[in-house]
Amino acid sequence: MNTLLRVQQFLSSALATKLSLLRIFLQSKLIGIVSKQSSDKPLLILGNGPSLNATLTENPLERLAHFDLLAVNNAANAELFTQLRPSFYLLNAVTYFQSDEDLNSYYIEQNKVLYTNLKQKTSWPMTLLLPFRAKRCPAIASLLKSNTNLRASYFNQTPIEGLPFWTKYGYRCGWGMPRPHNVLIPSIMVGARMGYKKIAIVGADHSWLSDLVVNEKNESLLRHVHFYDVEGTQPMKVEDRINRPRRLHEILHKFYLSFKGYWQIKTFAKSEGIVIYNASKVSMIDAFERKSLAEIVETDSDI
Image (tube, rainbow, N blue to C red; front, side):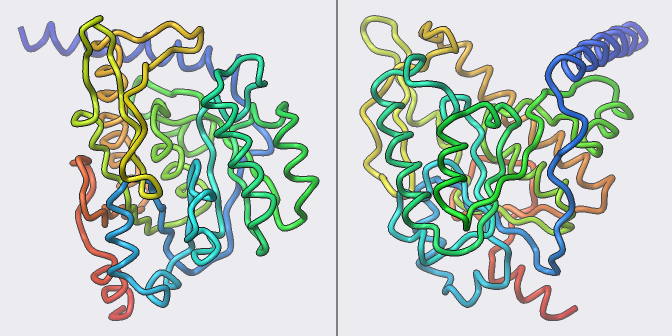
């Protein structure tokens, strides 16, 4: 029985490898991928979970200055954005790069507010980390043209799966990553691609299960909660790319892929000599060692 399971697992991995090769051929760019940065600091990824408020309260800006900061998604809408002055800012979801005709009113307004804040607030040099699809987005082109403090570097979102030696090679080349169903996955992988050997994450609550409900119409609804809006949105339908409401098992599968992705990242990071710490005050992620920012800074100071 064990032999049969191993054969089945190998065949499944081999098929996934072939599918990944096809995805890379069709979707990935092999040149112009974000490259190594010249920095001696570790990288701190600022997730948008509500626990980030406690982290920022307990850690003075002097401690945060020990790190290069990477913000994500709608962080520029927060008042603290201009105090934190992140060096990097990563956008991942396809909704940031679609035309208004393909979006509902919620995302249209979200994008309008975000791009306005990035344009008006960013008074320091900052690199936008964007998937290659963003190169075709007029809003991104307009943003980069309107603020000379902003520059762009690009990464491949292509899911890479399959045999271990293959996934490690594809990750290292920047051709793709574990399925990027959450912005934290590309943030960590791009950080590794940029050459950071120590990466910490905060605000990575991932408390989605407590914000998920099914109403009397059997519609699966998710409340979006962030550090800049701890009350959260009203429960909203989770839709796919053709605006079809997702069923509960489909939503849970996306959650599964995100948490699985962190374990795939951990395996890759270990092979590359990269250390990843989860310094979030609250977090459901079980892949990375937990350590506070104070402990990370103290460890670096002792070296």
